[in-house]
Length: 300
Image (cartoon, rainbow, N blue to C red):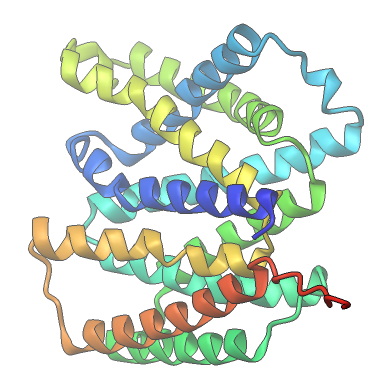
């Protein structure tokens, strides 16, 4: 396996594993309005990234971000990120964890489609089989859900387009995320100031655990996004898409085991089909990328 690909695979697995545990964190803040959580997440993410990039790494943005086009594209990715964050927080804290999980099951399918349309990525036969199995699982779950899952589709599409743009830009993950949080910070700060002035801010209650959780949202947000950015630069969008299944699986397990949500026959069918496809695809990828033995002929 190529060293860069191996690193990308590890980064991807770590980022999606952390995202799979996110419901536990946002559930601790369920008494706080979703918009206030989002604003704090956006603002404190900038603080975390600025400290890491400017203080720890002692680097300058202009070393990596050279053109106005890059700044504008990062404004677009920042907007997609903010939308995705806000909708996800709202879904988790308003009893829609299964819908959010479904969204992140649909997301890899959109990743693969975008990779084929815009990056000319091709799937091998095992990859196509895995895609069909995943599509069947998601379709069965969607039909069983009873209506069009708008939350799921919005989460899936926004994050797939975000991943595509990050892949196309080919920027270093750390400065790119720093600029994204820079774009997010002004509206977030304005909203927090408004809440404080009007006496509606949770921070005004001086409840230390809540305040620490709100500020800590910056760190728990920045870490998996940095890992995701590094993964996107080293592995294909299709492979990144299949790793995506780690996150919703974690969400499902949390929903069933800790939040005591119903685990229906639809979930069982969906899980079985998706994980079968994932195993087939992963085994094929590992075999394809393993170093081939170098058989040299021995002459007498």
